[in-house]
Image (cartoon, rainbow, N blue to C red; front, top):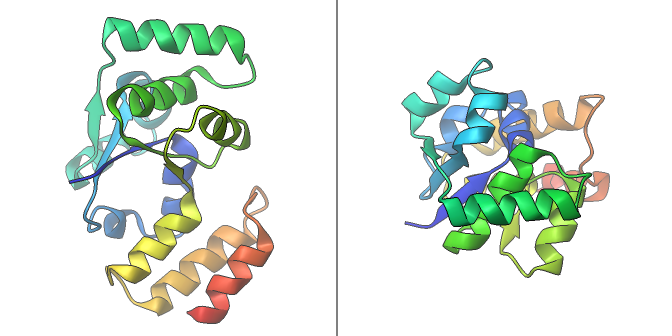
Length: 161
């Protein structure tokens, strides 16, 4: 099964859409690095995510070294995001991120990557929930004041649902 390494922003958007349980019905393994889990998820809804199927992975010393070097070179990236990036890059897994700077770095290094709209597309494709739920979820994400998703892409999906 394909492994997807998520950053926190994707999980937040999926929770905002009330689709967290459906996320784990997709035919993928979802993983976060241990530092991201402990810093950003543990107190939020980490145990629930573990119960749903989220895996927490520890980076090897070599992966940690790469993460440290990347953090030094790209100070604007958060430490948890850098660890997610390096976990995906070093293990040949796919990165799930909504962070613009992290996406730019993934493109620069040619790391396979997707965002939250791709997750919505996959939920539709694999029929893990109704399009009614997808539409209401995407509307909730769109209507949140911190939404940074491209409105044209959101509207294209909403029209399809």
